[in-house]
Length: 537
Image (cartoon, rainbow, N blue to C red; front, side):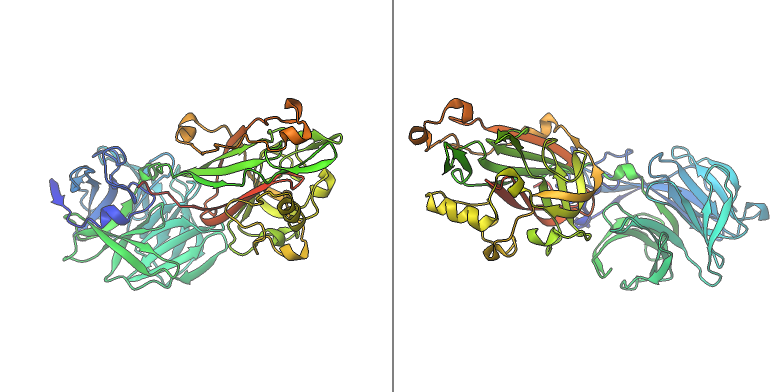
């Protein structure tokens, strides 16, 4: 039996972030180009008819009409009492477990594989002697976990079906479980019992009750989406809907939306990870620095503006977790030779901490939220590989590169020469660069860090809409006075340095990104923001 429902709750199509669930576009305009078509991305579910009759079904939403289609998946299985449902995050295989009310005792606590096209069941093996009411994979698919009512938390081998007790909990009846990763990368197991939501840190082994608003009624099915919101279904004859809500930091229920079905006793939900569609590209975020504030030494004179150390702009664009960086400057990627030494780029520092501030990350202590990118192989960075790092400590390298002692010295000399010293989005004498008035040294490069990921060449599509107005950037006001030749930059070439890296989930929200030459002859700072998934306007 197929039933077509018309959903009038347009909030569903506006509030879901980061994922494309069954054809619903996350935080974007709902269009055929961004949403899944019918048949491409179903929500899998199972209904408990009577005491122990099981009906698998799918729920899909047409991205054009916003109509909800509920379709039975295979026949009803009388007397089988299937209770748990889970889908492998990478293979897409669908699994199910039985409860303790099947017609045959040998069918208690059995693991099955479900054909996603026909609903046909393949028995894998008996997992445990008891009702396995809930089933969930870890986010990486390495573990299949289940809950045995009034017995506890088990792990099941999906190849053999054999279950092993991990945490005995003899008094708790959990109706369904789902998993998520926290900010530290720990697997968090969520379970619903009645109208309460529980959480268990599998890696730290810390159970706790989550401080959520009580669900309106007894819930029997839950599924965590990629954006951290929760799908759930209630055991209520008057409620034939799948609900979705977002959780804020206090785990309160916000932005509740509904997906209509014809079933009121849904025992399990499973959403393919492939339903999490690619994020649309974000907008370019650019900081443009002064065109006349870089210093250089020419014929024994310190001069400012338009020379081989001038930095013009720093730009970043996010596409999902891929970040593309573009630097426009007169300093090439390989640096310049001066006094027999290669004067190169510092490392790109990205500070998501909100409170670290540049000068506060000199220490050898962990600075949560501070990241660095080594993109030039010839620089004085303390890390070896090119790539993204979680910063442990930063260092000042200007004195070893014939550079300025500190930013105040640089600023005072630039103003005295009639230049306009700046750092783009952050004032050069800002409190961000701590103790500016006390002549602090600016940490330009990483001293130590934990390698996160390598660098890649940006795709042509990532750069196709890049545009920064650098008219006037070739101006070299010192040419006539100091007889500058083309060899030392008359006019200097403007180099475009670009690279991409994969950001971590923690690199989300507001940040300050800054970059200096190793000699502190110029720098630029960008105040930006990365989303979990940037919305397409």
